[in-house]
Length: 371
Ligand SMILES: NC(=O)c1ccc[n+]([C@@H]2O[C@H](COP(=O)([O-])OP(=O)(O)OC[C@H]3O[C@@H](n4cnc5c(N)ncnc54)[C@H](O)[C@@H]3O)[C@@H](O)[C@H]2O)c1
Image (cartoon, rainbow, N blue to C red; front, side, top):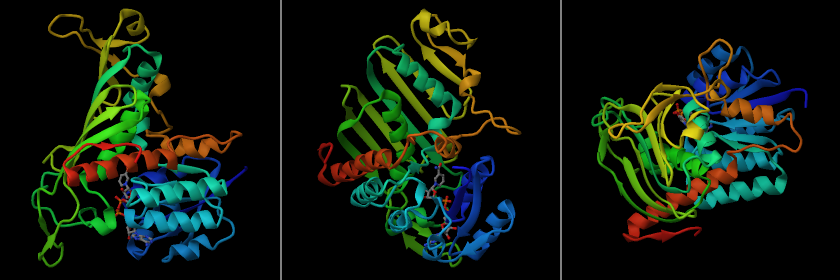
């Protein structure tokens, strides 16, 4: 395919901050149309792209006959209807996470896409953080031995977390989930990808910690209907156990994502704040492949800090590094047969975990997967 013609639906933060920036770096992709119900968001997007066709109604954008691919960057409630309409039109989809509001919607999207031969991607972008790519290389090499335990934390929280105004993320009909699904979906996906396993059982505690938030303009209190935080215990198909926390409630932490994985021979600690390094403890013959910047090896501090090798640094021209997930999706069009992960199947896998966690909280019980 010589040129991939792209439409972007939803022109908010992630569309402008990630999708547009990624497409503009793909020589074989061209953004030809964009849609948002909010004209000012569209205006800001057009400032980045230059002139293009704009729409207030996604159905009008999808009615064009020249689109190969759409990015779905709306609030979560619109992912399913827009994706189903795009599939109907035979248009490929790169969708924001979480895939849908519910597991039933997510499964419907996957089976319709598969039946229609649609190429799908989902923006679990943190898989392409350099240190996460290095963690994957180490785990795939078997250097840690069989994995026994993992913990994954997405500690998000603004300085004004306790008092900030309500947004769509706090409204169940628009978001589906709060901190557990918004933050947690990234690390559930990363965890399963890193350890190459599925979840077999989940139990969870989910909490709305700030039950009312002020409406931005009027200051009137509005009820919060999505969880601020979800804590999940998981049994995995490789016999390992995992503890996962997705949260908005880490006041002042900004975005702080940490994953630790321990196997019979060693362990690793990934920290989003240090994207070019990883702390590891593993047999010397595996360590020799990497540059150590802090040497461990003592009883007090057995962990070494190693540098992410250049091959995983996600270097793009004019910028230190970038999560290249969307660029890799576009690049995958060049190979036959098309192959890309994460796609809708991985989106469904995460949605299964979220739904099981909600059920577990409601029943105060363990929930077996697949459901
Ligand atoms: N992958 C990531 O790291 C990441 C980061 C942030 C957000 N996200 C996801 O991206 C999506 C958008 O988040 P955001 O932070 O950009 O939110 P946002 O509020 O900044 O933008 C959402 C946009 O969607 C528009 N919209 C809503 N309904 C629409 C409709 N029917 N038709 C067209 N446009 C519509 C809104 O007007 C708004 O401009 C969410 O699914 C979110 O979970 C992912």
